[in-house]
Amino acid sequence: MAPTTRPTFRRSLALLAGVALLANIGLTGAAEAQSTPLLNGPASVADLAEGLLDAVVNISTSQNVKGDEGAGPAPRAPDGSPFQEFFNDFFNKQQGGQGGNHNVSSLGSGFVIDPSGYIVTNNHVIEGADDIEVNFANGTKLKAKLIGTDTKTDLSVLKVEPRTPLTAVKFGDSSDMRIGDWVMAIGNPFGFGGSVTVGIISGRGRNINAGPYDNFIQTDAAINKGNSGGPLFNMKGEVIGINTAIISPSGGSIGIGFSVPSELAAGVVNQLREFGETRRGWLGVRIQPVTDDVADSLGLDTAKGALVAGVIKGGPVDNGSIKAGDVILKFDGKPVNEMRDLPRVVAESPVGKEVDVVVLRDGKEQTVKVTLGRLEDSDQAASNDADTSPDGVINPDPEENDDMDEPNPDQDQVQPAPDGKGQTDQQAPVTPDARTPKDVLGLSLSQLSPEIRKTFGIAESVDGVVVTEVAPGSAAAEKGLKAGDVIVEVAQEFMKSPDAVAAKVQSLKQEGRRNAQLMIASANGDLRFIAVPME
Image 1 (cartoon, rainbow, N blue to C red):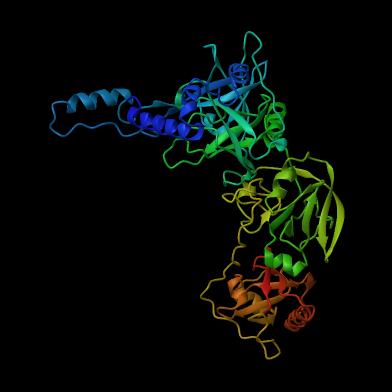
Image 2: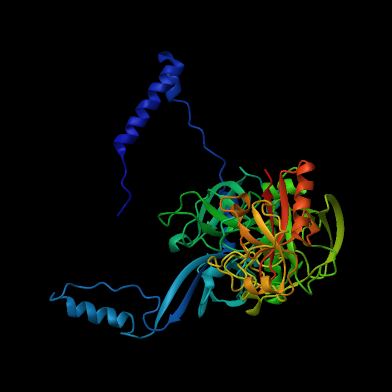
């Protein structure tokens, strides 16, 4: 159906505009005003778009699907209808009959980055495809080969074999872009072919939980289904983003689109071209956020940085250069304003590079040198370690886990540490001996003993002071402490006994601290830090 126009409404607007004009200039100037030419509007982007359209391609894929997988429900005529037999015969043939194979097609966008035929698109555009075809603006169609793909950033590189050099575009520096800068998107919305839309950068550094290294550019340039994989240009004609996602309740553009910034994409694309895979740096630490309470307990003015909850055995910093309890403030000269910044900057760094890391340790800033390892993907790495996140350090994707020895690159964001093995909420609290302080931060504490270890299933490798009971409604309970947790450190000082915990807490109160920072071990040895208010 053609769009419905509203001429009456337009005439009303024109009338109102005329009244306003007369009111401003007076009746004597009405004739002169009517003869004044209208302004031409915003500057045209036609010249810019004309030089870029040939570099943007449409990508069509097909996938052979067995049986009814991926097939939508066929229309059905009412039982007894004279058309029932016709409908059944027709749609059985279309879908290869009951249980037959059929092709599923999809459309997306991409852009040429090398005249020899290298093309960038989104991974989700070509994922699972049996056949990939690239359609150019001049009508040429070429089969494409997949060179490499990176699911963490949703990027893929394709290669076609053109007879003549292709029109190509280059990456710009997205870090130079500011909120409010004009941008232009070109893509294949709804399969219509090369379409140009213009808007501004609405936001930067967006985290939409799409992957481990989210750092999206947000734009109000119209992005719709089929635009995925297409370029977002600055006004110099440089690619500063790759259009990847939209937020829309209807499936159409509502002015909230997201693009992978070129500062992240360019490095990934270069690695995919060179190696067919990504080779990311690895620091080998588990991290968690620095909350306001943790910042206060550490003496930080503001909550910033990434708190190291643990060091991976055999990892690059297992030599003691970085320790549990350190707060990483800068990495290779780049500020770590929040926890999620660290996995990204580490992953973007070359394997084997020696970098300076600024940490807060014992209340003082220190600079340590570390040499990065390589972050490896493996099925084994995705099977364990669902507690605090390793750095990207280990795993920024909350849907995957990592292993103590072989980290997975998807889980850099922190998740709550798991309960100890064999521990349940129904376990009866163990009565501490008479010497145990009864009320330290709302906790009943006890020395670790063979009986205690057996009761709570605490591993022999775990040392410290065990929590035997938590007062309901206490600050400690609100922070998630539970019976069977082990207090390893208070304010970065190892705890050997319940009396030591009580004494350290009292000392912190006398120093005017409002929160006590605790290193907590679960029964199986997983570490996390929490800050418990002492008021």
